[in-house]
Length: 470
Image 1 (tube, rainbow, N blue to C red):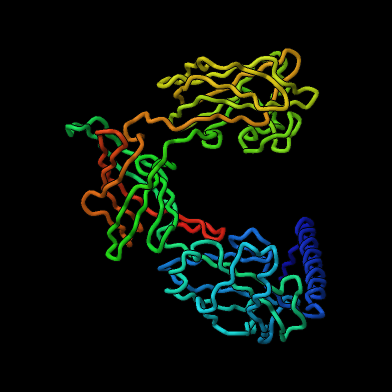
Image 2 (image 1 turned 30 degrees about the horizontal axis):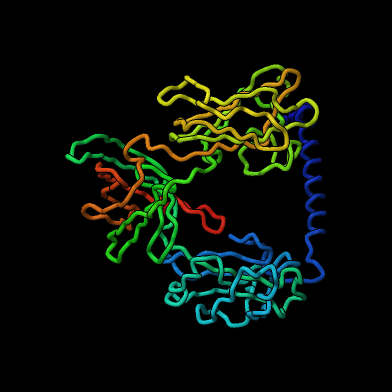
């Protein structure tokens, strides 16, 4: 008995679709294979990457002391889908490249500061598209030269001939700029405790703190860090790691504080209203307008807010002493006009919503094509804001500068005279952590602070690459 199964129409339709799809795939693959062909000639070149350099034709590279003083540069071959043979490229170190005015910031690296894995040839091996040349830096001569910390020394390379068909003329030279950092450089997560004592050794303040500290190489095994209990220029300290991993530390002397524009330090730039097509952050971009219609640096605008009071504010994480404001107003000659009225308020210390007009002010002017400068009695605050209004149109700001210095709200924010290690301070190489105990003394004060803290290495940015903790 023979059983015959009839294919349902729907299944037959599905099979037709699959067959058509397979035919299309076959045709597309066939067409792709026809276009997967080599070019008529091959060319070699230096890559166009720039590393940490912003100058065309310069590759900026940074090596790390204690992590090896070797690095590779390379050339690549183009024009073939598969490199089926070894290719070679000849090169010379050509000091004449240094005469280019665009390279005036660089100096020729002394030839005895480095060695090359091959004196004149880079090989692109069969099966690869890249050929490498290894540069090994002299650990004594290179590291002992202070200029090696700066982005100054460079090696000028020129490609001269190749077994490929050609050398790409626009990428036949490269200035390799080299500098170094030590492996202590980077960002650290700091956690610690502190106690502040008066002259009788009585505790007058204490607490815990966490912050992020940046440490920059200044010598072979020495970094300049920007943080103690607090962070910033006033709290910079030097760490020197000795051969036994003990740490010496001392404070950078700080001159009398000079008022600075605090706009860039603000953690918050907010407003009651900004037009969606304008940029509130433009008011602190550092661009000084040439007129009230100069929107080169962008602008804050609040259209449509006719006859409506609007405010813009700066907020900081710490308290500051402020005594001057400079506002450059914006007008587009139409819907955005110079305010007809304005005033400045500050957030009263210790409150979250109590605002007062700045005291004994010199007046709130509203003039075009200039900074409107307002001085007032020094205030201490974490936030300041300006109110604006125009009876018919809306208002705008091109730039707003606020001048002041950081306030010493707590004893630990006072100006520091010296930092003295207490007991043993060490750098734990296994965990990349500074383990520190120290005393802080203050200028013209009898109180002092004892600090116990750990700074755990987190990451660094080297040649544009974010390198996280190993």
